[in-house]
Image 1: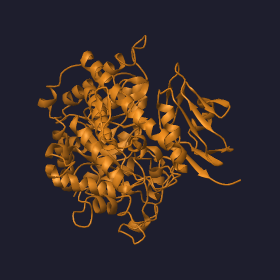
Image 2 (image 1 turned 180 degrees about the vertical axis):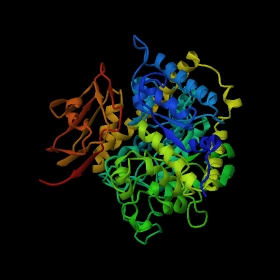
Image 3 (image 1 turned 90 degrees about the vertical axis):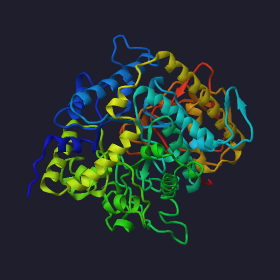
Image 4 (image 1 turned 135 degrees about the vertical axis):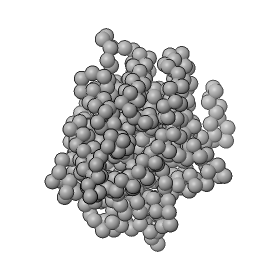
Length: 556
């Protein structure tokens, strides 16, 4: 029997999507596509802001990027919420973005939001019994992590963003990982778990929902899921050699679910409201030894989402909102046979919801976004997707949005833009960021002579995003440095990098990393002293995760 879809059912289905758009504003040009998707007919319940939406300005002449652009964005997001309400949506929009800190910080583009150290840099901060830097007093790396994520959350909240696709819960156990690398808190599963919990506590304290990613773990792969499907040949259970998913990848996610269940009874536990804010993002990697299918991404696998993540007895028992990574990534569109036959992302939406996801992400192409919703309509009409099961998922989304205060009566109480409050917040956060970077510098200076080969990633990354006038010398053995390019990357470096007696402008050095190519660049360094010179009149910024630098020591 075919189910007849009503507008109310279509509104429910719309809550299960998050869509991106193009341009600096949703109210002109291509940006207006998002008004179609969130408006009558499709009623998409969530929107992702990407770097491309932040980097450009609308005004002519361009507004000051630190003040006017922030106000523009806040106004646009408020306008999107008003549009959703006028269109008959029952609750406010989830507004998400990638704001991890460090290399993946969409809203830090052009200084709109404060740029903080990334995960690996935060995790490198040494624990010190007592350290005072102005008004910034932090004793441990975990305290810095919580404070930094709370600060990022406060800025996002003021702009109207309520969902951060962060922190990264991946354990970077593969040194040549081309996409995670310095975005991870490290290769120690328990330490990564501690930082994930601190990050979530910081974000939820600011009223922003975390999305811990990329379940079940993207750290042990040499394949970037933007470009292909990583296959991780590991078993689910603990192994005697410590190589199982339960030994490494799942540890941060399991600790998260344990703390959610424990509530406020334990250290770093979460109250009921914070508990309901926390979400998990599934990643596009294959687990053949778990699913029995080499070409099935975890994000489309019921064994992974409904099994490992949600199952209460043998699995992690996570009962919150699950969102997929973007279904337009090549790990989805170029591997699974039925997806090769269909248009990218469209049938993937049906498979992801069948697998147990609550929200499906499609970031780039309007035609694919619209077609994906229509595919789900057809699946619900035919009974392929049970309406009862879908409604259980809708309840999870509604509970999550209520925890964020997105009920219209509560959302209407939000105050308008306050430039003085924004400036005060940015000033406070700038001091915190500087204090964190200084502590990271101390760590590198103390241990620069003892860095393991993989730590070159941290060394390179720190000096490129810092404004410190410090030189760091490193005397490595002969090494080959491998730069892995990612898709849709760009970099701007206004400060030269000094290597030995030669001066290289990093923009030129990285030119081949900018195109959307899946290629590696090998640089052979002779024995030397590497000096990173921060010139006082210059500033460097790394705007996207451009490179993961992996040094491999070898003899000549």
